[in-house]
Length: 497
Image 1 (cartoon, rainbow, N blue to C red):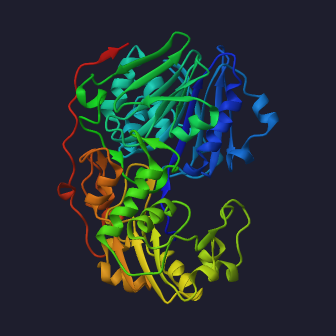
Image 2: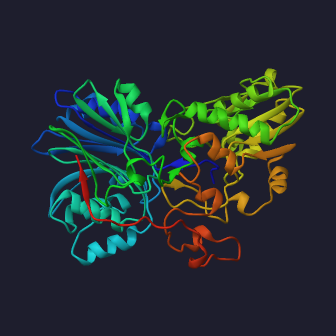
Image 3: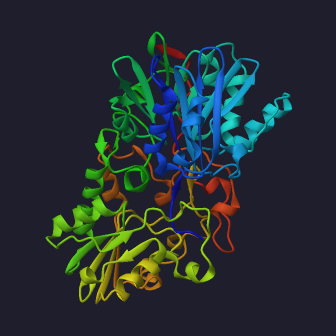
């Protein structure tokens, strides 16, 4: 029972004739490794056929020079996976290559489609065969075997039918597509490479590593095509102010991207995440001040917020916990004695920094409440006289259906305990969560522009009744009581070039 949140995947795409696109994709995925560590894959096209290589493990474990030699071509897509829908097996490693009535494609997906089972059943009834258990293949089969005689029609069908989060990179023999769901829940960006190539990635840090120049985000509800003619944009559900300028309209970008998931050197919706996280720490200091001698962050995602907290209060910041970044990157499991030490394998305290001090510990979230008590105890055992816990997110009270590996509501500690009970459970002298208002303020892209469902219980799209995720002990949540935002309007297709 881990106490961490895991993003589903990182995706990448590149159209760059004359470049070693397999190698570019390898380094792009390497930059996105934090978004998924279970499997990795690359598909390329040479204009005649699609080539594919996938396997279990980290990007650097999956790909060797010999493997990259099997992937010729001028365009490619790639994927690094953390599974939320479909088992963690090599058969579910992406990208998927598939062929149907409308030809062949490869597809990579970040997100989660909550009505994938319904879509799958409809396709099976029409004679479509499935090879995996993932929602990604369902999206791909809509494009290879669904209604519609052209890409725009099939993308429109996909967007009308698929409910949930999906950022996609899609490869055909001629082009690379980047697709984002109409609410823009998961991120996706566009970059220019060496003046003539195009790159798509989950985060801008992947562009930086390749020397690509950030152009803009893929907009909610947009399909972007890169081919020999350049870049083409279309909105299969119709172009509107909401979709073209989401900062002035409606989107539902996952707020946890700002808090935790994305790398601090990435930009999201125009914001450098390191600065956004520092603002979270500053706001947290104003909402929950306390007298102390030192501020430390739980590395790595809370480091920027801890610096912001320290700067706002004048309390010195110090590195009090050292992280072993290779924990979890081995197939060798610890024996019971080491397993009992739990978080000690991941973090090591610096006694000289903590001993005799009143310590503020800044962390990004508390999910189940299994890891946090061990962190607090570790700091106390290193000699801290007081431990004050500050969290740069509101209490997580509801499950996620959009591609985040999160506990059921019955397992979420904030859905079952008061804040004072949580403080006592984790063993802290005081506990303070950043308010939802403060978190949105720090993200700085505007109120109403985020998915806040895990904090507020208000979902941006209709979600199915799933008692295993919603239920608290001894109770269920009827379908009509699941709050949600109003659905987006469906309009006639319109292509923008």
